[in-house]
Image (cartoon, rainbow over all chains, first blue to last red; front, side, top):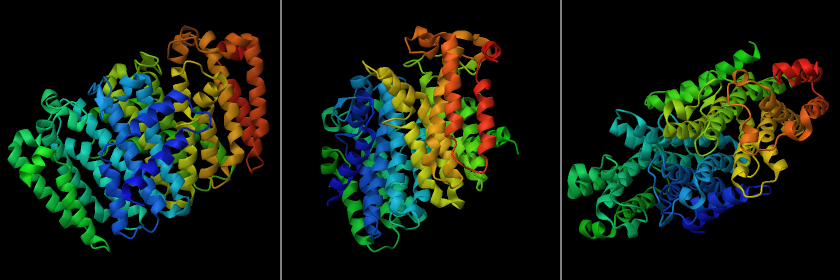
Length: 289
Length: 289
């Protein structure tokens, strides 16, 4: 089965559990709405790519790890879009969850997706119980305090934010969690795989900054120019478009170099190089080519 | 060490992890504020009571399970108090988290506490990895969809709510999770221990309804008369105070009867009987005596 299908099926299986007997129907609908149709599924593709490079001896667990990472990403989008944060009216080219279902259900949908992420890991680990502890620790570190994406979002509430810390937590942490979870799901030592995720997370952030200044709203499905409007730092504004493109190349090179020795090392490096181009908005990909 | 100290120390250890290097200080403070000083810690006391009745062969894991349950309870209080739900200005006799820290940090504090609950389990299970899967499944079922406390809160957003389902999810689920987690932490089959938690959860709900109609706001540290104001169902209003007291007695008896055979069966039953009185507001405890 191709990677995209594995991810969508694993996410669907997780959401089906949440929709089980006795579920309040509107919250169940809001959770499904928050997850489908998805965005690029960058993080879970990374999880499965790492598991495959390592032999993928427990594909069900790799799929669950990928789904868990994506459920947490979706949860963070739902909560970040709330009126008290970005107050975003659209996400993935449709109304944001709180616009479609109201604020109470958006808060609960985010909460429910966080819990579902951990439940999904525990369910899939029944056949590989010795791998669960590592997976839960990786995922919670990527998301929670002191350095995960929740901490990253909280830096927006501090009077003086360390911008490096902010970006590392806000984006890098879940990317590092994605690669490390792929390794842990495949029974490998995850610690060697964190750098790959961190570099790709930084690359993705630069690409996102470039999209924010260079794309049309239709192409990315959410409002553009938000970073400037919200006073956020942006590599594209700090380095210029050409400088940011160079930075992106450096980060993709560093990511490729960081891939530890493993059966699928070369294939994974190729994938990373292609991905580095794919995340750019169309116009910039042509400029960079 | 007495049970109360075990719980406070386990909660402090968990929050200390969240406050670690790199943490955004205001979110760290909001999370600690949400957990300390605590309420009656009814649920974690139940977790440890069950573990003790079963021999408590892994006290560190029982403490972590108790802390996990209480962190999730605190998270639900923080989110339930938000302006889009109860809009509560006070909680545990001090300003609610969003009044003290603002709405964005209240959302993130709840999110962070949910993640921390799972991380706490995984950390403590390093010495007993074979017990982690069961604990994560119990805890996520108690909290998430389709039947946990998040589902319970979501019934308030449905046009037609099944009141039995609502109460079972909103209160009973986390109590059942508390007793089952105590059993799983002590290496016992948790399935025999769910009824005890369910009955006690129902009893606690009846006692809460009685407090809501009979107590002063000073005694319970939050506004009273909220159930009527919010159009919620209430055993005290449906059965009258005398009828609700009888119902409470029946539930406590059923809870005592449900305790499975185990080394500490008698001691646990005695504890439950005392607890059944302790949860009543002062004036009613005198009436009932």
